[in-house]
Image (cartoon, rainbow, N blue to C red; front, side):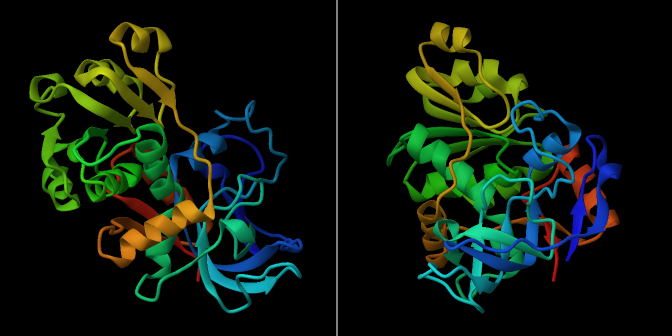
Length: 311
């Protein structure tokens, strides 16, 4: 099969095309023909070597941990899916990711792609959508009427977070650049904050939760807008526990725990019209396409998701 791999850590130019053998699925796994995948910050952070101590993969590494496609073969103990089924998932984090024509996925992580959903839409949801959902529902424990701030509301995780929070009945503020203010409102934000012109602490206060997708540069203001006892979840950088204690809030770096039931909940939101996938750009499945997609993600200006069309 064709795969785009890295053979050493470094820039986007390390992404190269190789012919590799597809893995054989285990008894509770399936082999998926990949139709689309998407780019997430973990892809280029791992490519650069920022995570090599925590995730010591051996080269060559196939990056990518979103998949949408069709099952080619299934292990003997797989009971819920079979060859020909359209599925999507966030596979386990291994060195054999989804920048490939085929990838192996555990049955428990699979969800059927609903009929109206395209492969490109499906590829955009799993990692970013489940991350947003885990931050808000499991860590943030938001309920109807909760006041939630999404730092970086126009990005992959951010635009899903607005929609998940609104479905829960939360009151949502979100930050983005001036050009994305209308987009925040389209996603459902009650308050759209232009970080280029406004300081968050001058606009809102006494919030129950902040979801940070930006990084340490917004942590200080995030602490300031939280009420005592509030919660800060960051998917970009670990928050200072000392400053959290000073502010009287709980702060945590959230790492996605993938699960089929979590993705199924997002599918239900999509089916009832409460979740849409914003696709910023589509790239070809090639060295050039993946390099361009990585550079776009690293620039941090993408609205919604960056998708790779494999088939």
